[in-house]
Amino acid sequence: MKQLLSLLLLLPVLLKAQQPMLIPQPEQMEVRQGSFTISKNTKIILQGSGLEKSARFLRDYLEKIHGISLQVKQGGNAGKGNIVLNYEKQEYRLPGAYRLDVSNDAIYIAGDNGEGCFYGVQTLIQLLPFRKGPQLAVPAVAITDKPRFAYRGMHLDVSRHFFPVSFIKKYIDFIAMYKMNSFHWHLTDDQGWRIEIKKYPRLTQVGGYRNGTIIGRYPGKGNDGIRYGGYYTQEEIKEVVKYAADRYITVLPEIEMPGHASAAIAAYPQLSCFPEEATRHPSQTAWNGDSTGKKVQQSWGVFPDVFAPTEYTFEFLQNVLDEVIQLFPGKYIHIGGDECPKDNWKRSAFCQQLIKEKGLKDEHGLQSYFIRRIEQYLNKKGRQIIGWDEILEGGLAPNATVMSWRGEKGGIEAARQQHQVIMTPGGWMYFDHTQDKNEDSVTIGGYTTIQKVYSYEPVPKELNEAESNYILGAQANLWTEYIKNTAKVEYMIFPRMSALSEVLWSRKEKRSWPDFEKRLGNEFSRYDWLKRNYSKAFFNTVNQ
Ligand code: TNX
Image 1 (tube, rainbow, N blue to C red):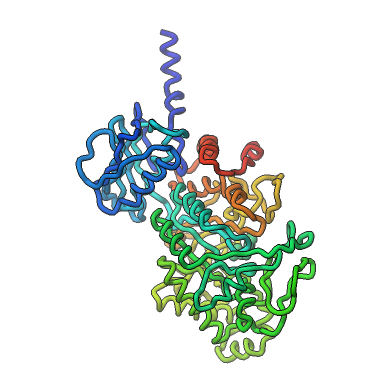
Image 2: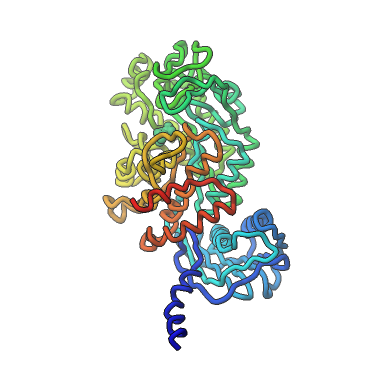
């Protein structure tokens, strides 16, 4: 009797121990008795049309990771022993709501729409044991779930260091696994132009390569003297965009202007206010090779040679954007706008004349004029611009969306001006920052632990309810000055990305660090199982 009593007392603990460890935490989850077994006889049955992407993803995943090949069947009777994908209208304001029901007899996933079904599949995948078939037991659960924010993004800088298409696809899979839906591809910067533009082949032939890179943390201990570069062909870009779309992920391309333009200027010097002047580099940094004429930069930071606001430049950028639009079907094009020093504009007679002619206040007004012109052009083509928060300087372009990176100030201001905002403040959302007090390789600095990422609230308390509606969501940025290989990319994003996913997906009231922490151990086992590189800094920071 006594034993039975203690067993009964223990029961809630035992049951709790069986609670599936999902990230992000779903809206509602009821754990039931028993489990469903996936084996080679299980079929994936599609009861609604347009669910092929989800079915294909699940089939491929089970085959690749768990070694079980399932058949996909369109329509027909579900019967027992199968995985059924369907729709069930939930009329939620954002795409992505779903219901997942695992019983002893069947697995049923119903999406409010295609995205919803896809996210149901992602949850099912997280319920799978970390082993190969022939049989996989899935715990019986009933889950209903939906996203909190419309924009759930990850950024990757491929200019400072270049990553092949195969890895970009992997990165997109990481985004999908965490129920995120935007991939911000930072394609151009001072250190390399990475997107093929047919009309301007020198952009990649010349702008895609630098003659060396500084060694170690800026200003560096010398220069490695190695020619470095690469770019994506338009065919490859299309392949990536399709791969992402199959996972309900929109690719947001970034073409930087008017600053961070050294690579483009190296290819087409007339884009500069001073085409005859050689590219300057900070005197503390070491340079490799020829230093005459315009060159792609070899160190990091902000450089004064920016686009001249001439008709030549506007025509050039419009032609570039025409090709970009063809490749990226999403509504938004990111045009940068950040860190544009005004030195050259100040000493250029042309710029000073333009400021007068257009009745602009100063060089900030000129930056605003630049961005507005590009916005007008893209709006006419049915697209919207996104820019870093510097686009607020000198007045915001009428329809622009702002990415707030220098803290939250820019985002707050833009929301108050009734502009849409994506939050990416440095202190929380910069995954290039150190996450361990003793990193064993160089990082850019900062200190952003997983706890800090988890604590981030994208809607600033300064905003009232109406203003809050302008916060579309948030994004973490991965700048790659000090990230030379894919293993380090994974190390920098894992496990911090798991925390971000919960910030973006789960209801605010659902978020709890102690609870998240309990699920992290399981996430590390998942990374091990999937052979992903990740930081173990969490174990050093737990008691801080
Ligand atoms: C600022 S964030 C930049 C990038 C750097 C990054 C390093 C932003 C819009 N510009 O060019 O890579 O800091 O953290």
